[in-house]
Every structure is written in structure tokens, then in C-alpha cells.
Length: 254
Image 1 (tube, one colour):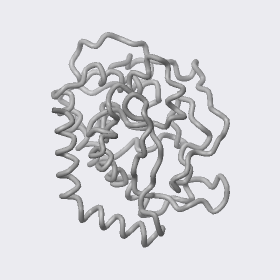
Image 2 (tube, one colour):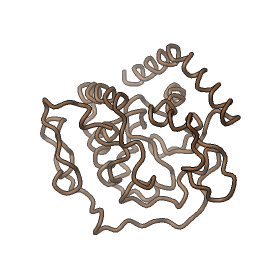
Image 3 (cartoon, rainbow, N blue to C red):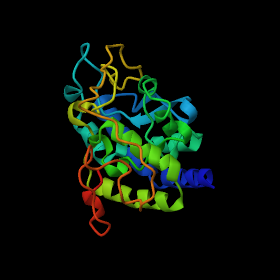
Image 4 (cartoon, rainbow, N blue to C red):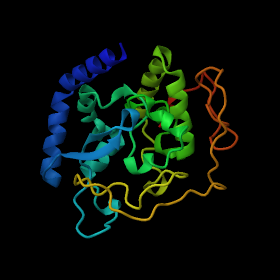
């Protein structure tokens, strides 16, 4: 049933958004040249690698280690701010690489640092949007983000998915937390170059950043028993105070 939902939503969205996809393709070709799509290897269900699709947002590097800030174009910035650069992932959904809802897919070079418990986020297909996405996106530290994903894997169902879809509307209308400070989520080891210029190549080898456990302690695992509007980690340690159920959805999400 879930897979049927994913296929139906992705197919309908691709048909309805066809003119938008074509317009974005033309704008990218006109401002950045080809190709219009950025491809990158990500880890999917059970850790199997797949090629994720996104619209290009940056020019090719003019010299080694050129900062992303100097390469992103105005069109690319618009695409990122509105999340329109993620639309090609509807094709990934049709292929079975991803679902509509699930943890966001990460790089294999990040997955190798998961603990056995954290690998539990690979027990479901990655998604276009997810529980961590509507709780703060990249503004969350990696330990907290993984805790949200693990909670979703344990508690996913129709009610939770509907809440995520509803809150995703707020994320799209009032985008924030799209990029973490410095472009790197705190508290998780990543390669020195996470995104190798959207040219389709893999990240360049570099030293691995090891998280300081005193600065970013892992959230204590808890047994989830409250309503889904509560945080799955201790909010007094790593998260800002959570909303009351009656507050505006858009204030919590990004």
C-alpha cells in the first residue's frame, strides 16, 4: 500500500509539474550550460547505493577547492530556497530508490560512521520529506536528526505520514534551515568536501572531521509514548523548546 501511494503521488506530481520541470531545465541550461541534472551516489534502503537526482545549482569549479558560495548562481539559489532543486527525485521515487516520506538519503561516506543503532534509519526507503525535515532540516545537529529518523522508523504509519505531509507545506511556504551553519551539520563526521561541485563526481578525499563528544553529546534514547508533536529526544539538551499542539505549524518547521 505504501509503495502504491509513492508511485501514484510521484506519477501525478510529474505530470502536473511537467511545465515547471521544463522551465527549470531551460533556465539552468541558459545560465549554467549542461547538464541540467546533478547526480550523486547516496545510501538507500538497507544501505544499498543509488544515484540521486537533483537540479544543478552551482557552476563547475574554476579552480580546486573553490568555495560553493562563489559557484552558486542566482537561479541555483532560488531553486535551493524553494526546494525546487529536489523535484527530479520524483523519478527516484518511481524507480523505487526513494519514497515520498522517509529519512533523507545520506552519502555512503557518512553512513560508514553510523553506529549499529543508527543504521536503523536505513531500514526504510529514504524520502523526499521526513520527520526530521519538518523538525528543523539542516539546522538540527546530526545526532538529533538521526534520533528523529529512528523515531520515525519505529513509529511510522498513516497518521504520522499525514502530519509530516501537512507540516511539509509549512516548510515550503516558510523555508528555513536549508543549509546548516558553515554548510555542515554539527556533531557528525563528514568528508572535507561533501558536495564535489555538482559535476557528477564523488566528493574529493580529505581528512575526516571527528565530532567532539563534549560539544555534541548524543541524545539519550527514550521509549516513545507521548503524542507525535513531542520531541523524540531530551529537549533540554540539544533542541529548542517545542511548540504546543495549538501553535502555528510554520514556527516549528523549516
